[in-house]
Length: 303
Image 1 (cartoon, rainbow, N blue to C red):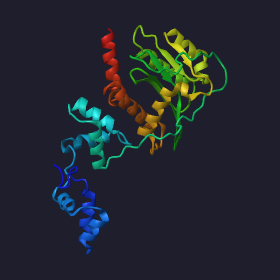
Image 2: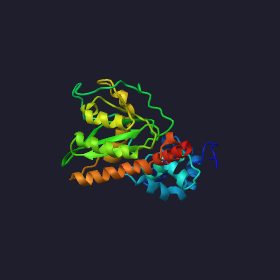
Image 3: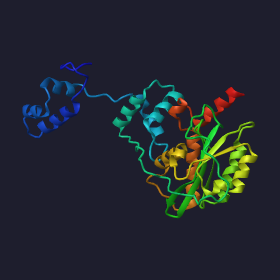
Image 4: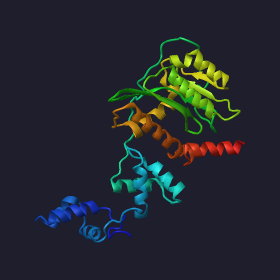
């Protein structure tokens, strides 16, 4: 319904409520309306037509989905979940409007360099050319992948995550969480990676020039299992930008503002978040699918 002024419904409700409150304290309504730039007809219309909440039937689900992560969930993820799971017809901007009305705020990603761990020690083993050349696009899973190590500073000390990220499915396909960024961590991650690799796949695995990626055991494990190794140029973090971006999302959604008193509880919570990333967290670039859903569909189609 339009207002008497011919504009959108309730364009000045906040002003009208303020005027009504102040007029009840002895101020002249006409003076308040003049100060607010509000016509008397608009004032009475706004008070007579209280604003209804947006899509109230969806609010419980919006609150539930938002509360899945300690730092909240963005409106696009909530909208994709509502469409995919609930069958709701709802636009992204409608969900954002609902969240604003409900007071739900998801922190915006900061331009902070979260990746503080540097494993570069010069040429200590075998290095490889940059096969990807910053072309991270992949139309399916197990084609192009990235790996790196990121550090978490906690009350009990430090912890390190070494994942492998699939650029096509957006899935974290293998990982190791450790108190030390050593070769044992890489061996644990590689074991998980090799066990997960589909038969016949020959992916490119990209990394920086860290010492562990030059190590003979690491190089040999990849070569023996059908991986093509690729490396960023020295001192050029953009060459591994796709994996760095995952660390940014992970630390904003899971880590920011939190702390743990012991390694085992931190590891359990981080691995639970990785499971959420793979199985629950829907992505716009996957057309609303989760990474696992996308990977399973792609592999079935290719079979």
